[in-house]
Length: 92
Image 1 (cartoon, rainbow, N blue to C red):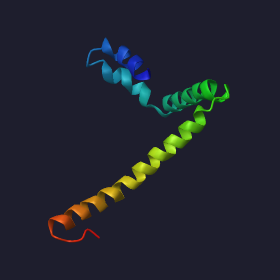
Image 2 (cartoon, rainbow, N blue to C red):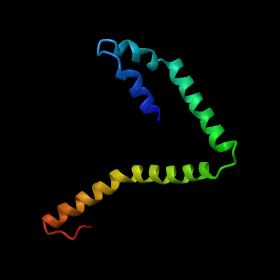
Image 3 (cartoon, rainbow, N blue to C red):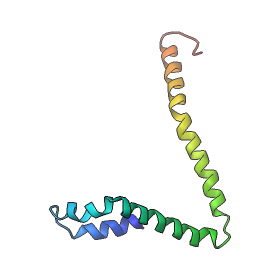
């Protein structure tokens, strides 16, 4: 939704006008206000309504984070296994 709103904002701008429109959005103050607004919206939507969704967000977020952290090691392991297969090794 936010991306659609952003697209609608910049759709009518000319390329020369775009940097002037985007520059204020990259200030520290603007980013802090945007994060606070997002946290307030999350609090109002999920926390104040006693929803179970925040627990699910933490569980699934932790699972995705764990997967992404372990991914490079798994890729190295698979590369090593493929290399061993190509050269007649056992893979371990």
